[in-house]
Length: 122
Image 1 (spheres, helix red, strand yellow):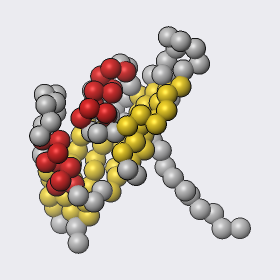
Image 2 (spheres, one colour; image 1 turned 90 degrees about the vertical axis):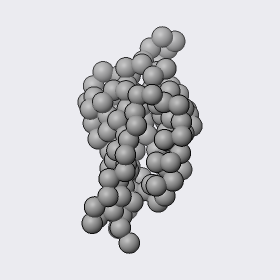
Image 3 (tube, helix red, strand yellow; image 1 turned 180 degrees about the vertical axis):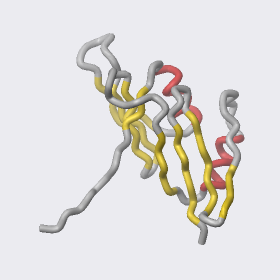
């Protein structure tokens, strides 16, 4: 039997749903795919996505460590940078980093989680 890994979905710890949605939906342009709470007023566990970028965001203790990092390949990182720069989001003004391996854009969410989005050279 062949083994095939199908998809990876990182989990990021969040502490404030409004701040998380401001960053992931308003700034990064993701959409909410689904939300789950065991009961009203219980911690949120949700999936947000934009294209092939799929993330789980969790208010649950122990689901993830604040300050985690994600490394993802992206095509059009320059266009994404231009899009984000044009938004009214005063908390983050990332620059593009270029080296022999490609071009990267590092985003830091309100909870210290880092998304390193890179477009490989060539």
